Image (cartoon, rainbow, N blue to C red; front, side):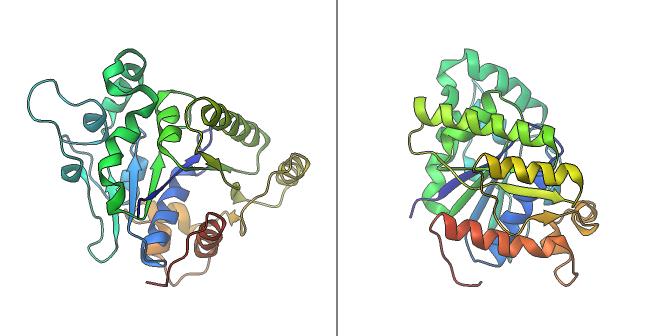
Length: 269
């Protein structure tokens, strides 16, 4: 089986894209038993932080996209980190500042593969995993294009704020253009509604989604003290607080509904 590759997408920071990617990835591995890879393509490195992966030099995402001119070509297996030996989840850490250089070079160095650069990096290991989640920076830049071209599925994510909704619409429009021009196999899934609070702007966003025929996965993920608190411990909230009640408990149902919508099923690990 070749892995399903999915990227969570928005063009506005602060909506919880990386947090959601980390918690869904953790749920896929430990609840549903999928062998999961999460690739951290954001120079900020917060996804790596979520799994307690230290910021260190060496082989990372940037070096795999843009290998050194001298010396052997890096092997992606050397870059993968398994945060918990009991969980079938691996992280491809970011390369921090070097990813900024890659963003620029993807436009000028054709040898890197342009929008197909990330696909080139992960393609050799797709048969080793069930699901690959791609996390990149929330921009319209080259890394976003490369993530979408490497993906089978784009999952838009928004918070209940009008600017966030508008930015996610722009991300979907970008995905639709890439589907038309470069990656015809790309599918756009339902939206994730994150950081939900029942206020006037939130209700406005849900009305806008309804008016535009946009379906949100259920359940929505509400605001919870446990989700950001878990970051300090280098664990997704679903790992750090498995016995606490809170919005993080909804990740299991959310992940199950996403799996059902894309035709994947698995037994409980």
